[in-house]
Image (cartoon, rainbow, N blue to C red):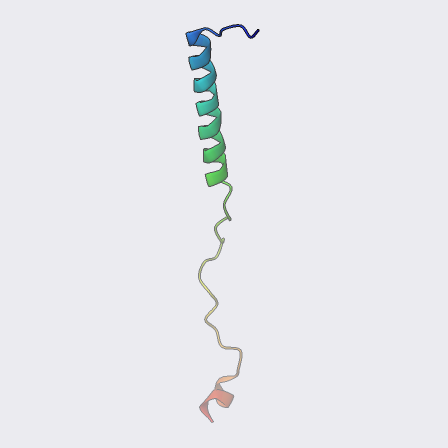
Length: 54
């Protein structure tokens, strides 16, 4: 037959599981894509100005 666990032991296990779950959620939230170093797109044209005017 299984032994009965103490109340403090159950609460300690629950607290440890909650801490592990929060740590996993924080790590998962910070594991997203990194920010671009240069977020500004290059606005220079690739065609010469003379060709665009015609």
